[in-house]
Length: 168
Image (cartoon, rainbow, N blue to C red):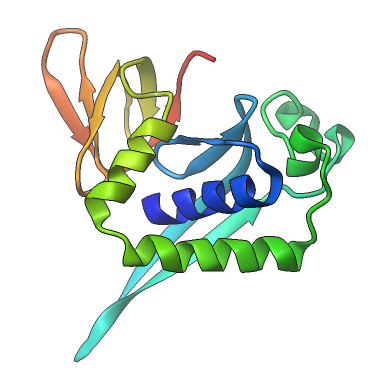
């Protein structure tokens, strides 16, 4: 999902000139509000290479009233953030082109780009996994896309997934 997030950010920047930020593990933000999210599911196949299925949700043309009341302060659309109406087909084409470019780049380069686009790194965060809530400082993102969290007692946790909240 890291390469997918960067491909969305690249597409948005190329179409609007606006830079977005990434929120670990799979959200994209404009003006500290979520405008996109990705999910990746891997599928194993007998005697064949595994597949990765990428799902993308992108708020393109919504207005504030289009979002449920509980999301109106945390969600935003590309139209709201940029004032630009980007046709869906144009966004999809830009996303796919940028995803192909990202897949061809060396992974360390994309990881470095992701780190630069992530305001959480070095900041206090709360991570909710399926079973616990963990507070700490987001130390780094490793080559596997795992978040290294420094806990208040000085110990570290490495997280593969979770939902993060951080101060805006």
